[in-house]
Image 1 (cartoon, rainbow, N blue to C red):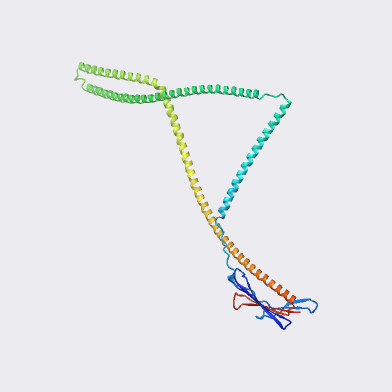
Image 2 (cartoon, rainbow, N blue to C red; image 1 turned 60 degrees about the horizontal axis):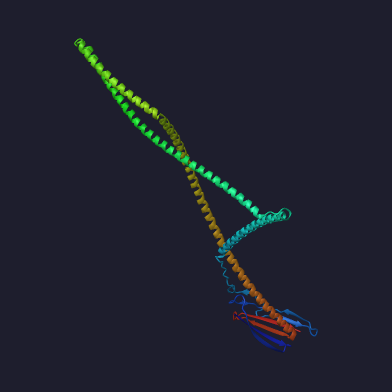
Length: 417
């Protein structure tokens, strides 16, 4: 706290005078600083016996002129303006609480409306019952309830009957399902057996074909041998006797006939067996062929669907990759914009803090100046009143401020009657 020393010298009638010094404590501008103000002399004159007075300032002072107002910068200390980091969190919590309360209020309003509607329905029913009570015949509630209970019992009996019927139908359907399942399994077993028989028959046919090929080869060899022998016979016909030739021919013919008969009998038996087997399993083979054709068509269809699905998968993967690229670009753009916004926000915060600091400094300066002006105004008004009341001629007021040893403010007030 600073101190102020005020020295006043009073003169009465130009000859006698007295002085007074007083110390006033006070601080302006937030402490620590000092200001230097010099005022010009003040003269006051009063009219003789009429009681009027007039006042004015003269140009006499210790410094020889009006000194400018100077403010020490150390008086204006910066005000630390800090923003609470939890303000945004508190605001978000308040917003969430408001949303929750709004939702609860809306649900409460819906419940109230629903209860009002039920109340209106009950009121309407009550009015109808009241209107029917006095005018129409009174109905016995027991009879009404008994009729209602009987209706409910009839409905229950019908529902139970329907339930029994549905259960019986369900059992029948289950039996049908089991029968069809059994038939399906039997058909699958038959099909498997037919396929196995078909494989066996195919093996037999292959064996018969190989036997036929071998026999045909033997027949060809025998034919070649006969031709060879015929050539020999033709070449040496004159040397051979007719009996020998006939005997050889007869033997070869017997051998050929027996071989041909055996081959024909074997082929006929195999043909009959294969025909019987084919007759037995012809339907199974046709069904198998149809199923194979259906399976082939299904395989082709599934392959086409797989190709379409692969194409769609490739398209979707390309779209996903493109979407990921767009998302990454959007995220990068958003991050860049967020950084720009954060930078702008930090700059705005710094600017706001600077403006608040300047505003606080100006406010402190204004308060200090207002207090000093008010004090000096009161001091001047008090001295003027004293001069007017005590009829003093000259008043010298010296005010010493303890803010600096060489800085003095002298107020010279001159008054004349």
